[in-house]
Amino acid sequence: MNRRDFSKLTGLVATSAALASCNPTLFQRVAGLPALSAWGPLNPADFPGAQRLTYGPRSEERGAFHAVGLQGWVEEQLAYETIDDFACDLRLKSFDTLNMKLTSWPI
Picture 1 (cartoon, helix red, strand yellow):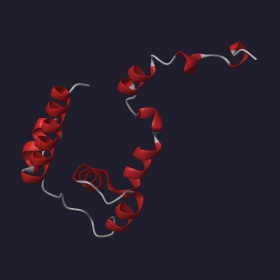
Picture 2 (picture 1 turned 45 degrees about the vertical axis):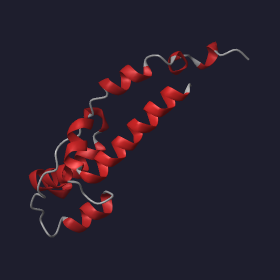
Picture 3 (picture 1 turned 180 degrees about the vertical axis):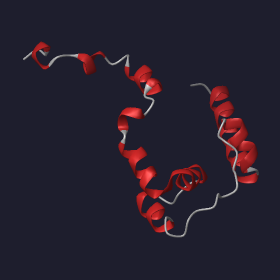
């Protein structure tokens, strides 16, 4: 890495840090993250469960709790076969060792 590339990289990092600290909504739009939304209503009886089952419920999780209730949300989390794994499968496709049989490994 030469001096010019290093200067460009440090300028980019400094600009990113400045954008993130000054205007988080602008940084979220640039990063492609969803915009912040208002907290949805949450049943007071479900709130302790939401706190204990998550690292503090995000707005999407609060919306899911409100829509299906605590029991329904837990059932969704435990139904792993309904999760869309397409993006993960694409990333793991290049690792041939994941598809190898145990007997085909050299000993």
